[in-house]
Length: 68
Image 1: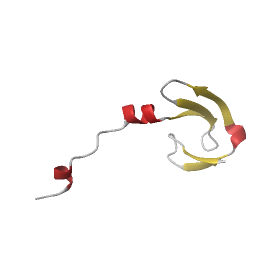
Image 2: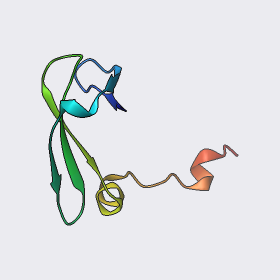
Image 3: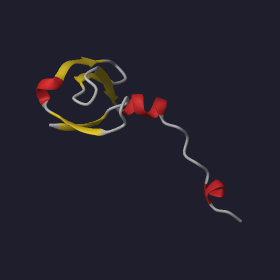
C-alpha cells in the first residue's frame, strides 16, 4: 500500500500494490504507472534524486524570507 495524490481530484488516495500497471527504470528516475481509485485514469509518478533536483524550484534566499 502507498499514498498518492490524484492530480485530477487533488485528493490523497491509499492505493494497493495491484493497482501498479508498470514500473520503468530510467537513468535519471523511476516512473511508476498507477491506476487511480479516485478518477479511474492512469497517472505516472516519478521519483529519483536527479529527477527531483532537476524539477525542484530554487530555494528562497534568506533575505527574501526575513522582512527588514
